[in-house]
Length: 102
Image 1 (cartoon, rainbow, N blue to C red):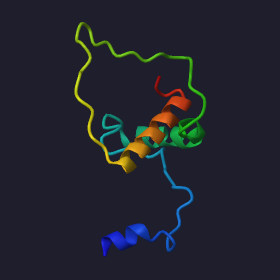
Image 2: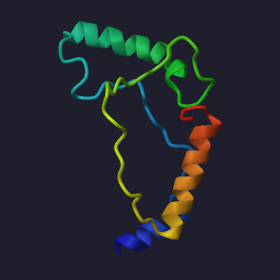
Image 3: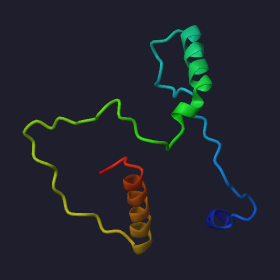
């Protein structure tokens, strides 16, 4: 019964997900009082377009993880089904195209 609902998209088409990036998660803002939280949410909503996924990468900051003298982790690759492998390839291509990864 569950699988039938997953494969039947004709009843509930989803063109665009309504994702609200301006809501704080439960673990966020714990040190803020209610007034401060409301003010923060107001700022997040006012500038919601800044937090949308996508867009041009910023040149204002460079991210670097200092691993000191530790060598990179070396593990054999996981086996993937052909379907999952194709999904992974598409996701990696997207991340490369958007300059999120190099």
